[in-house]
Image (cartoon, rainbow, N blue to C red; front, top):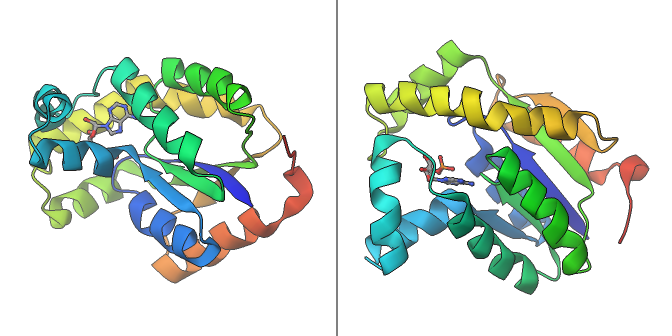
Length: 189
Ligand code: AMP
């Protein structure tokens, strides 16, 4: 069973990699962006609240995310990969409290690293609703200000690794898979 926290800037390819890993290991991909987009298209109260933040490239308030993730973790008994969460220090700290409460722990924190200029090109070519150039630049700014500290939070821990995301998808995936399969950092709850 694997439990993986997957970090990286918007456009790094986290979603694609996380999906492949989830499929191969039969674990749940918990993608907060996908969950929020589903709420927005279903026009739920949460979706209506989240939409304006997402359209502007801002982060949705922490409390909303923490509750969403709690529900997912609770029912993901075969393992999980977190894609897009935690994105703030408050979320990382909340997760650190939440996991022991659920009798869980994580095995790996992996940061997918891609240089900024490459991210902008990738995001412009993706064409999602929030992928306009001004919004993209704002999302990267938000990432630098609010999400980078999350990397520092985990970087000091033993189970942290960084992988180079500026390579062909399959190469990145091989790297990711071999890290997740290495049990050297394993600390079961
Ligand atoms: P993503 O698909 O991960 O790029 O997420 C798309 C948008 O959803 C982000 O730009 C945020 O507005 C929102 N979002 C996703 N995950 C989080 C999170 N952990 N905390 C706050 N907002 C989030």
